[in-house]
Image (cartoon, rainbow, N blue to C red; front, top):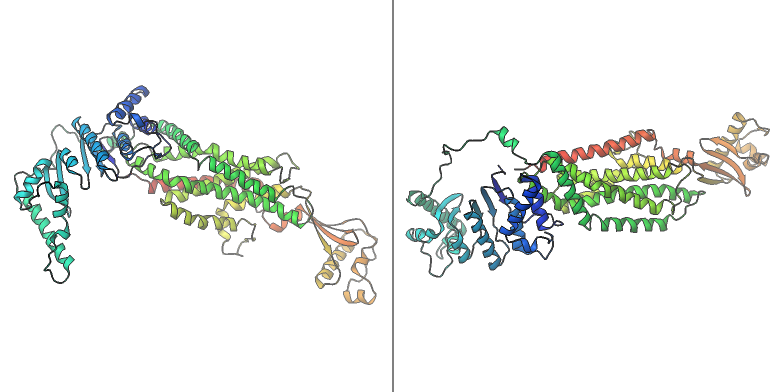
Length: 589
């Protein structure tokens, strides 16, 4: 029924980064029929009617826009379709007397031009009270008075409630319909309960007297004029939205793009955060080497660094911006401005350019400064792809959270609950094997797991990274390791070594050491699986290359393409869940 009625909420919920004229024009584009020129003329006429021409270019979230002007802008958004009935909830709340009186005067002019305006108002002053044509007073859900406002004082005089001279009638009516007004000094016991009982009896008595008086103006809701044709549900559905879906999508996409561009949280702060964090990372991982445990640790750390940054920043952007926009969405849904699907798709598409540019900016800062693996021509592009996918996945998970929770503080509190499990099962902290950990199943819904697998393979595969381990004599563990290497060489490799006993006791009795066994071979001995033994600087060294290091993480349950496909499925799935949640929790009433 939003084509025929409109409701103006007490809180002025408008897009803060749009001007007054842009808010009205958007409502006209998606709700008002006619050509573009006709809609523009309609907006101009409405701004003149509501006296908004002087503030037409001021942003609705600006402190320059006064309370009265913002309220009139909210009324204008609802009046764009020229509804026959307008509900206004406490329009003068928070206004000074002059602003409130001016607003009610404008509402009076609108009513005289063929509209019915129903307003709830809290203790208006005498001048505002005198502007109302009809007055309805309710108490405990019962009608106490419904007639012309100017007759109310005389009516209550006849009931024995005489309004003192030079007293605001509205304030007097509120006083006599308050439970505290029925308290007496000589009451004993539960004073409030006694006063409440008197109050209820008085309300019932006034309600009965209202229905007995010939001045009552009752409306029989079951009686329809013979000229009125009742609309069926199918007809109501057809006129639910004026603009077709594609038109809604285009205007919503344009509005989201404009608000994102003007929002410092969505643009400036996001890009500045990216630059600052990546510069800090650049200082931490500057020009990594390719030999040693520290270099290996650094290269693995870079992958987790960009993964974590992309995931957290994309979710944080939703948490900071979406709650404010969600309130506008709910109001516009109540007014049937557009469909939920058009809004959701338009928002996702409008934010896509910035969501794709931010990871690119971060990678351009860190890729060459970190000396990341560039053996193959696709290494850079695969790094970019993983960052982009991680960013989109974080956006999807953030939208799921934002669609279900409306309060920003609650969203911030829930953010670690959502992100930490995803990061913990990525494979960076601990290996989560099947049946070995209670969090095993969480890894399949964690985009961090798949992205870390792809990123680590991309960084280590075919890279010159080598991690050496010096083999020392003396410990049982090293002796056992030597025995395994010695037996491997003697049994699987053609060698001229004298393969004698490797029993530690026999070797000790003969004065033989494990190092002396390999003295005759100076060439590196490959052990397979990315490891080899060689003699360097008087020590025997076990070197592990990228193949062995990658195998130790055990992160390759699927191929590259299967991991990429899994991430894409999570991105699409999270957006679908977010849309369903928004359809449930954002359904218009």
